[in-house]
Length: 508
Image (cartoon, rainbow, N blue to C red):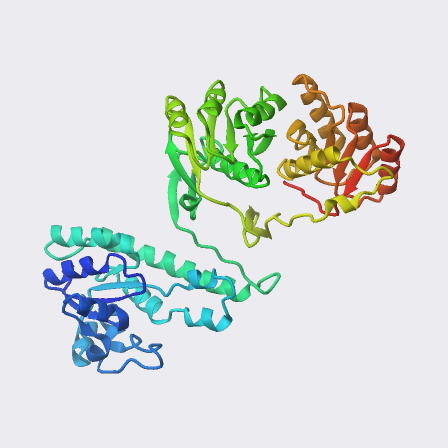
């Protein structure tokens, strides 16, 4: 389909001028609107303003300019339908073969602090989506571009096809339109619904990042959608797997609990060990000492640039992924000798209080806010006769930061700068405690004087008693069990200090 006439109206003007110059050089008649027309005129590109083309003025602050039969008739009429062609001629409607439109920046506007409802509403594009949908519906005859990244493909196709584009390209671009407008409408609906605790509907539309080799298991298909590339950059190694992506996400969420230099090791989204130290190599030693078996084939993350010294220590074991905000040149050179090891640069924070967690269930999805609410003034929530020492309080806070990221039922034994034993995902809390104790003993670590953290309340005193017998002198847990008085009494009998935060951290 040879392109003879194009309608261009864009908010994002990146790459527009060279694209329009190429179109003009190929004899394409250009119609345009408002600021887009002014830019093209300034660049000496021949353009006809939309009001001149339709014979109807832009009005109402530009709200009404392209909603006209000469625009939509020019896009929608079927070129091989005699009746359509005759009606178009009768009403002076010329075919429009190319539409180049991107939408008002609604999402960018509403992401700003303090944006008002009126400001948001003014960024709801009406004419843009209408033109895009009309053009995409008639993709057999009309080429439609919603993304500046596709300008080059259109020009290349026109040069290769005597000024036309292929059906395959038009189909791909048409699909992209409906994906884009769907996401745009979803963003508007979500913003207008945001004051409601439970909106009447929920929608999500994300672009394909890439198709994955397989899912959790080789017989499952999988793909990654969204804005992954805004948060992570792969510096080295083979492509990421479905499981890698889950693990990287869990690792990034965990490491953001710590402001001090910290290294964490994870396996199947569960922490194997976490250590903090001004010397990253020491932080690694603390994390690795928690469990020297589970980290094989695991995920390692640091919240500071990886040094050569740390890289040498890490390279002694097989790891799937190493994540950091940066890698020193010598460290990167050393780690890149392992061709299958993936090195990931974490580009910034991965979670905000406005994020949502979405999980599929039979017949629908579950949507919840993230578990990002910080517990404040924890030191004031002591429930036992004995208050914790400063060292015990530090150990409890460390355990509390980590246990939040361990699958329920979760138990973590910790010192003030490291984990000592982790028990995850058992059907009873006392079993998780037993596993954590066994892990610590297997690693040759003493739990004497340690803190124990539990993601949910101790339903009975047995879990706390097991911790005390293992050497823990303090505990941190949400509280809230009908047996709380019994648990507190058991702690007092053993002269343990205990904090009940009032906040549970289940992780299923």
